[in-house]
Length: 345
Image (cartoon, rainbow, N blue to C red; front, side, top):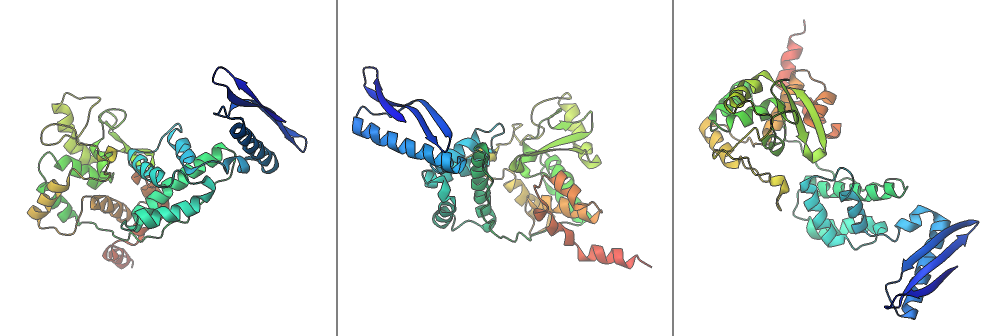
């Protein structure tokens, strides 16, 4: 049984004792009710006793039912490897809108948030919020010994696959400002996301010239991947490395003022592109149309497919979590496949 007793000059009531059911017992050493009013304290004790009896009867599920979505976010952001900065911003928005809702009502909470706050977002952007919410809920459930749950993914057809011919690729690269050309060469031949490239350091945690290898930190998917350095990338990075005194730390890529690029993943508006103006100028100079900075990633993946690299390898090198986002590249270049077929005799 649970009992009440006061402690200290404040006369705050504390709960202690035990709750038993079916041969099982939960000990309560001492829990503050937070009040000196006996009736209010008695209500707190009754609620605690009910919750503990439910826990004995139904297991961890009953305990977690009293938690909120904010509790799940707390578990998620305090795990050993916290989410990326952009996802922390999404968590802040989710928590502000639905954090006080019961964790068991996560489906209703997600439906409400999507309707009220994501109506103008593209399906892919909405699905990123869904993914973050689902990850937080499952982190919290796993910490309490419960099975994972799943929020239905939002279907979106990100079918855009844009790639350039070898001639157009080299023309466009040469059309960028000199300090931007090495960055674009990295994008074209290794396919990192723009900010993953811009924040890349020299040394064993980034561009390792001694090993001729690159560690790409795919922050969006929390994947880190070592890849051999492409000869074209080595060709443009080696003079920079030599000129700076063969550094083993510091940013590889600097802007026109010799300063590191701003990491827009850590701003209130994630997804900004510091290369936007330079890219627009390069397109105008080259005469190439309908090609975004992010399309360099499409170009790289498409070229990998046409070079015969399997999708699993492309997935790992590109930092994708699943084949879902890579399979769209499997059908690139009908003309390329036609040439291959015509070589059969």
